[in-house]
Image (cartoon, helix red, strand yellow):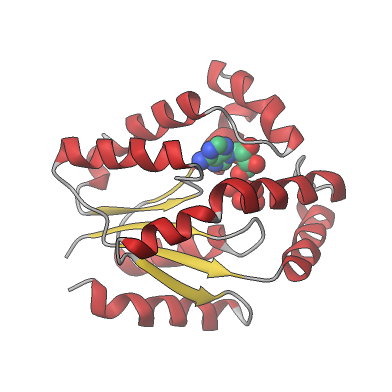
Length: 192
Ligand code: ADP
């Protein structure tokens, strides 16, 4: 069985949490572009230096930077049986680039899971996380900007994937376990 999946959803919908659980469940690596960027910022790499100011402002890192990073990651051998992309693609250009990368490898996506959650819920969750973890981009102003950018640039990707019959929508409100069960249940018929 292969599982080549994309997770979509606004900041605070729970993509990272669910990606880690699904990765265990399905035995494929979770690839979080946000985590890779943050690790590079922490290690003060060239990539981190290029990404940081965008992240701090709640803007997307330029496509050419992000695309090159994902291309390198998807060329790693642990993605052979699949992957779970958390936070990529987020722009129409990234969709085209992902299509090209997979084409070159003779691979296809199995499904795109959209975790849905209303804006007031995700804002409350992110402000809670800010208090616990102190992530640089979890301030009120930056959270609102991240949501706005998501709505403008990433939400339209859901209809694009729906047209390809790949979109699976899952309600992200509820207990973490419950949401995992919903996703696994929705994916089961698709991953045979
Ligand atoms: P969230 O989904 O909560 O905004 P992430 O950890 O996924 O958080 O991403 C943090 C930041 O990393 C984003 O605000 C953006 O600056 C950058 N980033 C992550 N993924 C991408 C991407 N695919 N394209 C451009 N920028 C990205």
